Length: 84
Image (cartoon, rainbow, N blue to C red; front, side, top):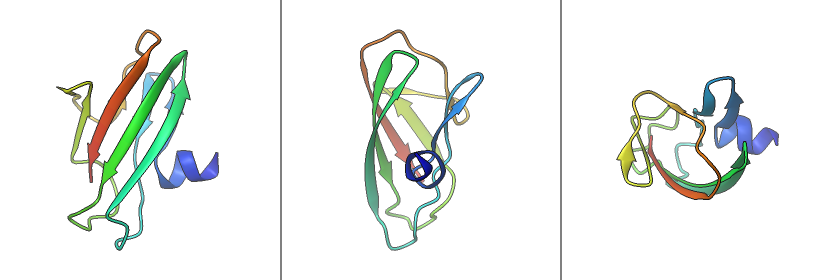
């Protein structure tokens, strides 16, 4: 869980799923599957710019999310793309 929550950055938060990755600069991409509050999130992290920390853009099922917290979604599988 340490890897998923603190390095890949998909953590529980009272308002939803907090996305705050911290990857090594040399790691250009990463993927994680995270189950949270009855939904499954397939999260793809894009670190091609080598920024390593934080998220500059998050989309869920093709829709842009403001900030870095994904509000709880009703069940199902959701595709999340994160640009670091």
